[in-house]
Image 1 (cartoon, rainbow, N blue to C red):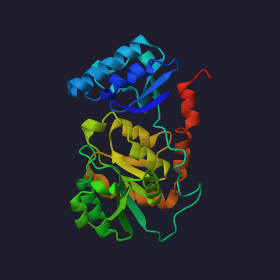
Image 2: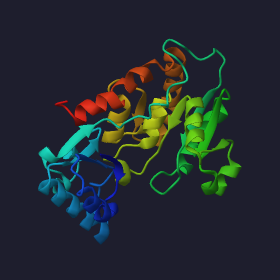
Image 3: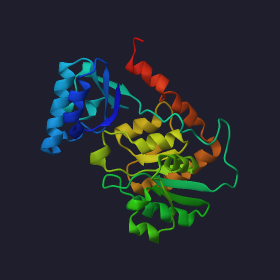
Image 4: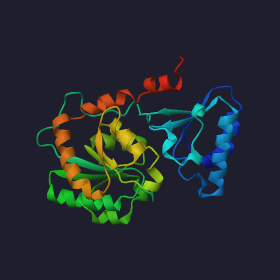
Length: 275
């Protein structure tokens, strides 16, 4: 049994139920080790997780991309209780360009900001930079994809194309139309955390520009590079220039290679090495 994106506050109910089965249990952690003591509920849930991993060998914690040596030693898990895997991809989400295929010579470049908007995934500052870039590069278009009901009002005043991603299929379809995906995430929340949007965007063939946090860097550069990282939004203009050259010259060839080490078959070998 593989449980994806389990949070500390869910463990009080989930772990007792999972203990009733004789099957192997893989618990996909999602930022659980970043400041688990921020409140009594998350702190107690994390302590329960550590106790369960020590008590029963049928439970394994699944870490995405990198080992937890990056977090506070107090929040690291025992070596025999954890497995590191790449962030799994969605099989049906594939690049729109085939190997060797390239964009039409005069094709407009679509730069996207996609996903649920929340405090740890702000978009205003990055959009300000993108709007300035597109003003100087008229062959580019900005796409903002987010659930329409949570659309912030300031988007009405920007030169962007707003698309609704409330439905999962619409979300994936929009990612497939985007050439360059830009993300800007809060460091405290994402220093040791993978991004589902980056995984989905990479699967769909988006060239990724993202914050230079260890897990995210690993996510977009292994086993081959499908993007670049930045330390400051001031780097975006130069990186966008480089990204457009890459996209036009190389298409989405690297994305097909990147997918090979992130599919179900490869990950199954990591979870069940003796099979």
